[in-house]
Length: 219
Ligand SMILES: *Cc1c(COP(=O)(O)O)cnc(C)c1O
Image 1: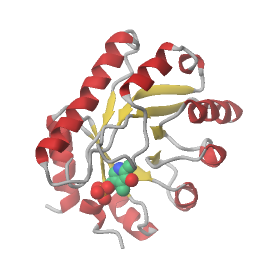
Image 2: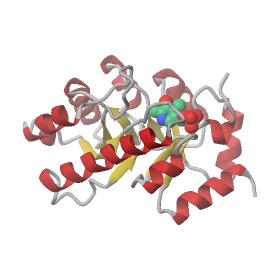
Image 3: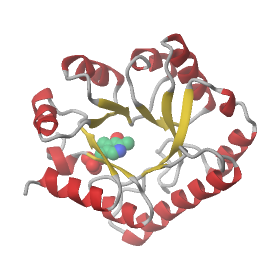
Image 4: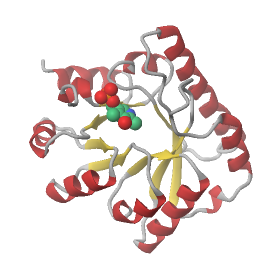
């Protein structure tokens, strides 16, 4: 079996959704996975995402996984199927506004900062709780908050990565029980990449974002 089929089987056995992260990779490489059945692809730049969306079949679900500038939301609002990087109120507000203009409800994940490295975007747990309890976010009718997303520290210390994933699972559980208990579709924990997806799944991930393992290393 090829790498894609092996990974897909692994994800399916573990009830985990596979997002194939195709950033920097050409259309032909994406098409190859598409032909094997993959329909969910993740990109981290608006321009690249938009171009690839235009060039490819329209049954692809495009996920925005990278940091998103507020003034660029309008370019992806008409088609993006999920935004993983919901990391601040001003962005959520803008997504709500642009989704309303095109009469859509966009699935959004709340990006939580779990890594010790301080270069990563995302809410701290306490900021997130405060924001959600403030209720403004819950009034945004054109976004559907589906869960959380996080990235572990880039390190080969497995214990640290595992602990960071545990933190995100914990955070998800708390938000679920304190705020979204009645919301059945608050159900996604997006964590795990090429180097750590197995640990992530063990710690409760149900959506992994895998790039280099599928497409080869990026330049
Ligand atoms: C690039 C990227 C990935 C995939 O990383 P790989 O190590 O290539 O699997 C996952 N998530 C985000 C947010 C990314 O930017």
